[in-house]
Length: 486
Image 1 (spheres, rainbow, N blue to C red):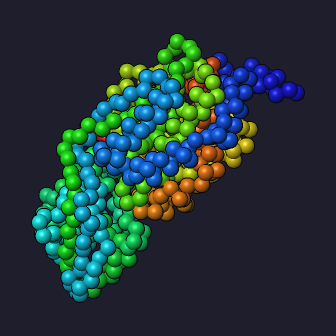
Image 2: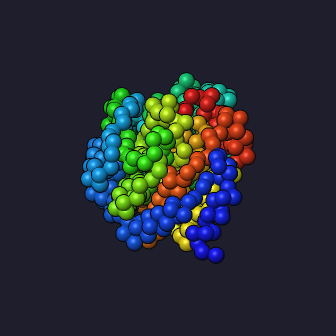
Image 3: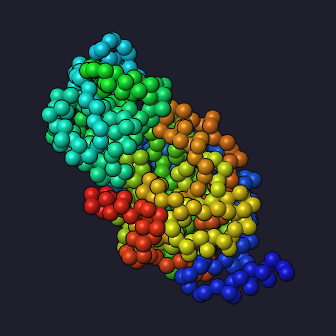
């Protein structure tokens, strides 16, 4: 049977609306053309190099972040995209280190410690913070309240043991951490670094970009283990100092551009990723690879001359690292047109060879992907996963909670986690072929949704909750709703 005839048979067997996405022979041919363009002449690697090496780390709202937004807007304009513009939102505070952290142990002996300021921490007072350490066994309001007399006038120490006893939900965790201030803690030490030479930043912004109300240091792994051992033997006293540059209520831009669709339905898809990064490295993997993918797909569709049925909207979000703030604000600002969004495709998992897609429990998305499975298989990425741990970890989440079919590129993440938020997240770790494979998967899949004659349904509230229950993400969703994080 000829390929075209096979696709016509498949098409005829599909429902007209809703259940499974349709792929016409014309769309299939366009996908082959676009995939070839992205693999053989894709520009993602060069875009990532420029973002990482030439612009550098891109803390939300920083000078480098502003340069990155201007660069991206300029590229979209140069490529000939339409409706290229900034969309502004305000972050309660921007944060950048102004000095290198200095820390030492004073009791039971003198020793230098390897510490930096944690993201969105206050600066230490003049002369630094000095005090005895109290090891908090769980970051919950109940644990903090129970140990309030031991916390008062002490530096609270949180490590892996603490986190194993703490809630996994962001809102409840921040409730516990914020309770430290009312208990009279002097400061906070987080022990999550991978080595003394590689702090790993998490950001204490309560998912909204506000400052953490205490000075909080980020301690290296070996020093964290040392303090844990010494605390079992007796009192430990430390001193540390750092200074941060903080500004209040700063406007931040998302960058938006479009390739208009050929029909008049007003429907659109989103291809997105976050432009901001942490600062110890240059954010080449997190999320230079995602931001460069968005730019490269826009470039390839323009270069191919393809005309999708629906509008393709390209969005580079800010504030992801501080709690998905840019995408949350975008979803709020565009709530009135959310019913026209037929798919969201986000890249935020680095550049290892792709495996397929996170589909977050949607069987209709999985069934639709089967229609382009041979194309995805040629890229080594025909798989899907319903793993739910990352559901609220990146910028698809503010769309997913409104019932929009939302996908995140699925890659192995062994290499990624070793670089994530660390000084080693630099461009030399990016492999061009592997990056191009991921970009092609995103481009091909997204274009199939954009050009299909039908679209998948938006989930109702009850269907969304059933979806999140099936992937064990419902508790986190309810927690974020309770804390108004979305």
